[in-house]
Length: 181
Image 1: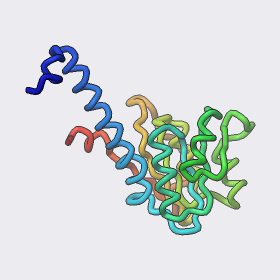
Image 2 (image 1 turned 30 degrees about the vertical axis):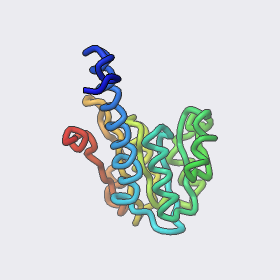
Image 3 (image 1 turned 90 degrees about the vertical axis):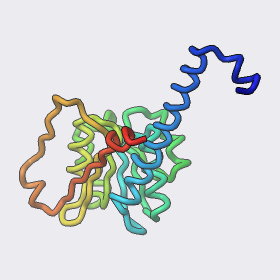
């Protein structure tokens, strides 16, 4: 052990180890939960429109993935307007705050995009955001990817016809992968 390491007592070492583990988990979520999910699961095409639900760390990584893939419109959806300026640095071109509208955000997005977005990535874990992310994708080819994890008692409710309109719903089991670290 070097002299610097000897100065740490076991509690300091544990705290440092815990902080280091948290950084590893956050970085894993950043690459696999946001960026990786966007590039490898949602797979937006060049020129497509992508909605990102939640502009926290995972959502910003998802936005960066959409930018890298060549999406021409990246719409950030978040209830915290303070996140909008930071999101621009990751390619977000338009912002929607659900609190600013009298109708469901999926309807707002459908109107903004002539029928729906090509891809949506949900990064909040809110069941309402998950439903909105699924319902805002375009009929026939839209793909919604759920990264966030809902409460175990939440119920995903949507109109049954949404399933028959050609919309796809995918999930990313990030917690299983984090457990593999």
